Image (cartoon, rainbow, N blue to C red; front, side, top):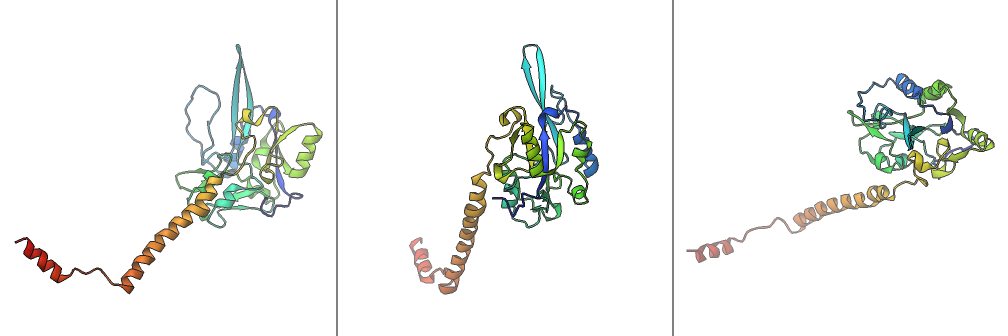
Length: 264
């Protein structure tokens, strides 16, 4: 279950993919508010730009291109941190406060407390956390500095079509259901903070049909790594005990003399 989440007061996003026109105003607004630098990109035969999330791009519009004969069409998808109710990144992070949940249910990061272990990268079902030149975690935090001041996230405020709607998560879901929308993320991982109203299958947008936290990261962090550390210090302890109780290994002088005589 989610970490002490109050679903009644939890905030979130409803992303209606049918309303996205690919204008990317949300990308620009995100960079402006968070003071993130522009990046030099290379054209690779598609108008999608940039091609992936980066340490200085918390939110991007993904272009899904399809070709039918001589006709080309696109669907657009807002890619960002999904602020899972059961957040794998928070569960595996060994540094208290580096990744945490605020009172609105949003997953927030603190670079000053990040120890660069990158467990969060392996634990995220959506491949979201990024590390830059400072080797510190970076991702969308729903404009934490804005929402704590009672403002709407920059991307939602800028969106010209109503594709991005911020508010009470339960109310947004109820409104979408009343409009007969097909939702993704309502119950997955104790409910995603970003719920999508989709006009296609999750796989068409690059999302897992049933997202889950990889078991392997917990196996490494909670079982294999501690056993390895225990084995290392156990070996050190055994050597020290041997030294104290038996002492260092000594060469028998008589044996050395006999060996010397044998070689003459």
